[in-house]
Image 1 (cartoon, rainbow over the protein chains, first blue to last red):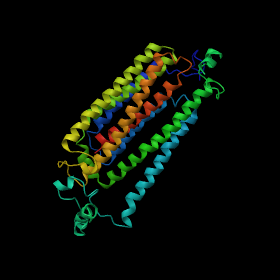
Image 2 (cartoon, chains in turn green, purple):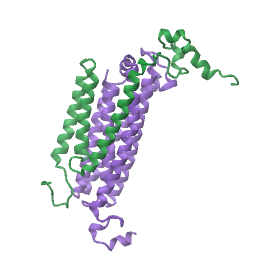
Image 3 (cartoon, rainbow over the protein chains, first blue to last red):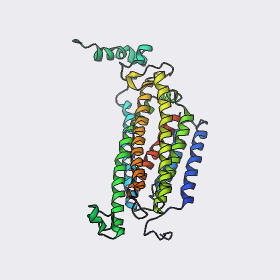
Length: 146
Length: 219
């Protein structure tokens, strides 16, 4: 650390850096909204997440001082993100490929929801023919004894 | 304890007896906050995972439902929250330089930004309540095509609601810091509480940085 001041060993970030990072974050917020106006197909979410990831990196490194602080704090933060990636990654792998073993039928989620009173329960044709759409509310709401 | 502390040199006044020195105390408090932030990342992570699952199951519904959110309000709220992060960082910097008055101005500005965020969120919420775009079984809106649109609003309300609770929690912490600063509890060498409050506040900003594109923009 060469840019230390007289204040013991505390790092004091120059005002320019805070304002510069703040300005960059605002500019990239505008960019992410403008970019969302174009359709890049499946790349849409990737672009949005890349911009968000870049903004988050700036916040973590400069506002949260990870760039200057004890590297242990960076390791802690990075490990939370690593475990989050494992969690979401494995879950999505299961979700996306489960149908290969056990075909999934579209079915109403929370079938007693008020919305199903105003519109037919959304089901795939196959599910409807199995009676799932109508059976679910009966099971939960019309139990004898109520 | 207060009388006891006065017998130490002024530099050590704020060092609790179980720490070797001020620097170790400062590092320890930040370490504690980072471990807490780790749990916060995983806490919100579960919700991001739920978002990912339902989005992959119902891409068309997500596309149709996200249009019900007002991009302009979400955009303004993003700018507001980023600005609040800047003023929070500047509050800490001011205290590092020993400027009490500036610290209070910056903390107050952070509070104003946070309150603005919540007011905008209130208008968004009340508009959706009015339309019946409510979570789960309370959903009565009929204008969105696709399967199970109420699931999108369950995810929207839980994610933004939990984030909103964090904003309120952060505001309470900032108010406490404001009062403590006004009572001369901090100086250029001791400002750990403001610093860890800042870390928490920046994480709240960081989570919103992801919520905004995922909920309002991505189609």
